[in-house]
Length: 309
Image (cartoon, rainbow, N blue to C red; front, top):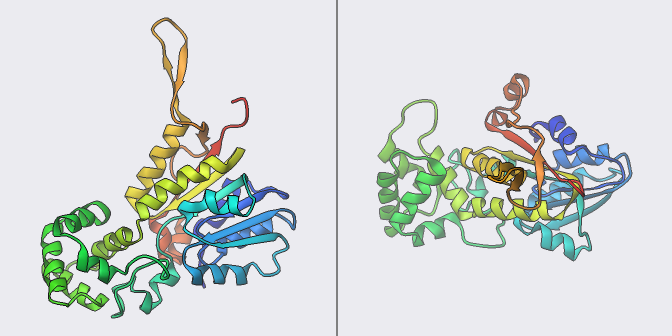
């Protein structure tokens, strides 16, 4: 069974109130969405999005009989503003982004996300759009692949790994996860607890799905349609993504700068707001023991300024 990360902290952080409208923009298997629906106590709206159609279907099933009005949309969260407006929803009271790959995606061999199975090298979160990881690796330039491995995977041997992948792709040997693993193991070797292909798989997945671009656009769109006083909660599992969220919230919180002639002025990005938690929230020891994926999770919450603030 899917275990939603920091479930109570998310519901509390969103400050769910009956009668409101809330969005789970990356609904996955619906654990967070179900908890939000229950907090609405039969009054209000819940909108769920996911670009993985299978995930959206799981969430719809989990929300059956939840007692609130549900709108389910097959969409990437970067398009949240446009798809909500198409549903005549112009503002919401709270929004959740749970960034990254889900346990179900990792545990489904044919999706190609995991090095634990030998399967087609796909990695697309939306299999109805874009190109697979295998196709991307056939077309990517070696220098670009080095950049991706360094930026998204922090792979110390990025240059050697990229060269090996490009050679294998040119020889028609980059169609499965097993072939990708074989290249990485040959270059990096097998040492330590962490599988040598972990960084490479993460980096390629993030590039294929444009996860950083999706995050930047989703944050901006989500904050724009939040009601004054509404809250946004973001869970990340990658240090680079957490830095983007931290910087985005900090810029919209802004700061007062002293003026030479006296007084001060506010400097920052609009719309204004405040960070609910100055430091990222993390899962407790018990949750991490029960769900190892929670160990790398960070939760940040932002509140849009009320009118007049």
